[in-house]
Amino acid sequence: MADRIAVLLLPRPVEALERREEVEALLRAPGVVALEPGRMPAAKGGRRARAQAGRLLRRLPGRPAAVVVFGEREQALGEALAQRVLGECELIAARDTTGLRERFARLGVDV
Image (cartoon, rainbow, N blue to C red; front, side, top):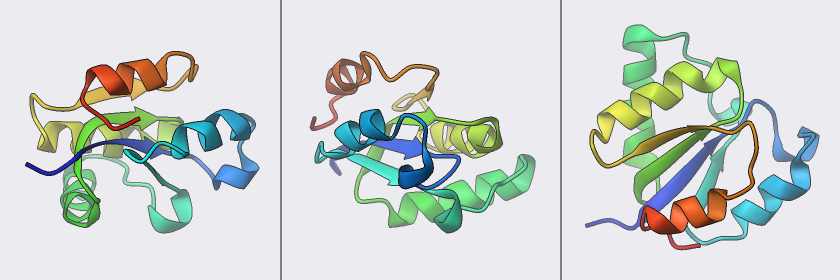
């Protein structure tokens, strides 16, 4: 089985985030990856989001245990990713990054 990872769906590049330091700290963990909008055009939902999720899953360095959505535009893609890994992936709205590292660890992500 592939390594369990946490995927952060970011609304803008890490450097432009208000909570940059928090996100950078999460990204230091070997099992955490981020997808920025330049590499991830917004999928509005439905078929497009499901297709995009399928393409992303083939390119990710592991199997998502958690998908963290940082903005509304990323919600449809986050839902589609979590559905593709049905029963094995938790969808998380990132209103606050407090406790995410512990949550990832409980889900089997290398943090």
